[in-house]
Image (cartoon, rainbow, N blue to C red):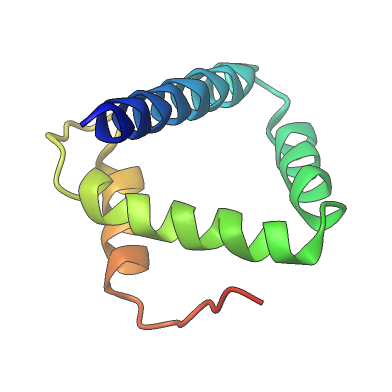
Length: 97
């Protein structure tokens, strides 16, 4: 039973870590007039990382879009949720290599 508790704690810690980092990334996009620079930074951060990690990130991102596509929407996030639906319905297989 202790192992399960420890594994649950590790799982919860990883979710909290990624959530905090994702919040920082989303907050960094709050820069009116800097869309091109934000896109470039996202591109460089992904493109210059290890290729296996690029795939791991995209696999996790695409998987998270399934849940995100189900959230409540209004005019501010309707386009983002619509894009999430397209990504969630994609059948692109991203292997772990």
